Length: 242
Image 1: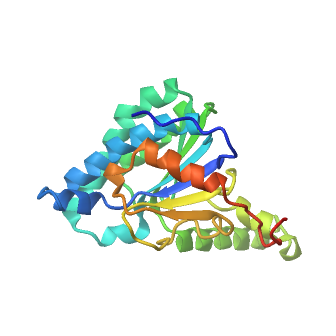
Image 2: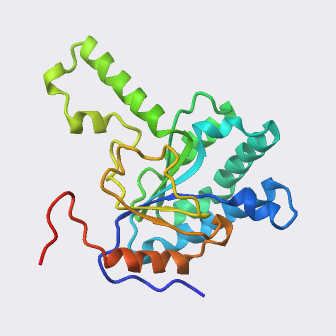
């Protein structure tokens, strides 16, 4: 069933922690990489549904700085899946007006993957129907450290004075410097933690945790979560209105 369009005050920016691929596969007696491949297929359906649900910015947590601790086989398999996704989806994303960009440290990634990432970013840079951001080798603390280092270098070079450093100046040096903060963060698979994801950006985001494993997360469930979000009152530290 296709997801119904949301007509209320939908979140403009939704961030998702895509969790549960490995458990989805092992529960069926399959290798974990089968779950990751099915999870990549799920990305397609969510990306296709997002604009009709009022989402303009969609940010997906694909691989964290901590995920390097996994087995070599799984890490290599994940990197292969990322490369194949970029290659297979490039034309479709471009045709559908999706801008794809990546956040996280790229220096540790394979050079061929880095080239694919840069290529699709350049190909889709003028698209504006949906801004899709994928976090690869991303960690919130690492991002904050890199932003602080960039500010320190700017101060040392005389490009900015210490008294000019404020939240806006710091935010511009984050990987998401030209993106709005997420309105809603969703985590699948039943885990109830944020796992070092968009720590600065999610300061006032709403959160939703679902027991659904990522390969089973459908556009209809996303629409249901958005409907609940629409009934919330975001106060940003202010008092509840009458």
